Image (cartoon, rainbow, N blue to C red):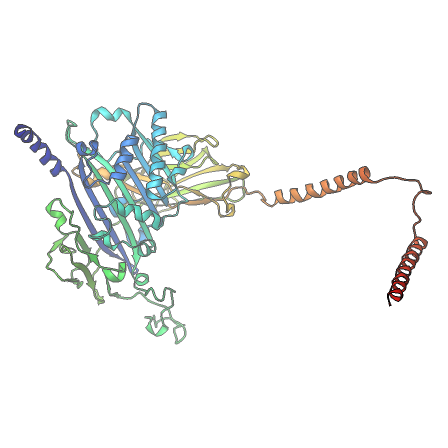
Length: 606
């Protein structure tokens, strides 16, 4: 027995060291009284413990779904709103933890054949639909594609399993993200929103944000031999909150205009007066705290948090050096500074509330925002119910660096693009009339749609020259649906999934030490609304009314002929005014006879 314990002790120590959990919150004020809050929760579990269903930090409900469907890597996104790259700068996590509007899911499934992979993919979407209270079960074959160049595995797989991995991608742009999706998200965390930075989550604040996204990423990390593997699950929540809107009292939730005497006006305007004002940007930063923004302070640190020394300071704030930051807590804490003092990180005490208070101040300097590598937009052109066009614009603001990208579009089957009308042009940002001689389009992958079976899959590899704008345009045809395929509100339109843009790395991927390189750089356009030919749904009612009227007239006439009894004119009773007078006389005589008989009977009784 002692010998067995001696052999099992190193294995147990290895499993304990491979399992850890850490969380971090990064706050960054943005222009126009906005605040970016990035929550990150990461836990590692050894692959041996995962296979033996020994879950410590890895959520059991999610782990059993991955085991049942043979899913090796999973990426799930819930997103709302639009990231304003021109005002807020680069996206958090380089867009790798951001999804398109609604729900976006892609995963690497292990299977021997493509049909087996699709079967397991359907099982995965149905299981995740029940776990997160979302409509993921509607991701069928018409909303599923197999990207070729857009996505790469973030994890490191054993070489033996790479040949059997199948990548599948699906979107639900019409899905409305709400509190029903946040509650299952919190249950996957070790402290489940009771302690740590997850105690700040509130559905009223999260879904009142200007932009927000929730991400779940599961990836394996193995060594070169593939013997020591760790399964990592990472949960990320990013949101952009309006400070002025968050500071508004819940007792008076109706937005009211600021009194004119409190508005800073530009008096140089000619129309400036007592009743007219041109507001100018305030030079002072508003006063706010975590309790004011999220409705409550942090309820102490999570007691299950373990990991490297960098996780000792889970709360970080990026503000100018002269910005005053006060910490409100009953127990001692520690402070650390990063990025030349611009980022201040704090440790959280256990079983004690933790809050940050930033008073109102006039600041001279601002923290520079990271500039985005690309700007992208997309919209639908044309008019009418038969045909239309797609117009996408991608801008490279760099003055000396060209960017290679992969442009992915997943279109519904009722949106039929004409590939021969595809046009890709590049123009200089300095001189709009100058076009580059080289073709920015390098390669194209196109898989046409099949009606009611699959959607359109389009991937383009482009090279955008420095300080240039690339335009992608093509025409498409709108299909006519069956009346049972229209949603309850057909006049709203049909949602089209956002386009996914991946910035290709300049150098090949070498190892997982550089997490930013392993994640990649992504950005997504906004979703679109497509107006399809909509029939007049009142026509069935009109047809029913017309048919009922014709049936009533026809049936009534035939029924009258069949039931009516025909007799001769001499056999019929007299008709006309004389017949009516004779009938009245007969009734009057009968009535008088009845009264006479009643009178005679009464006399005899007396």
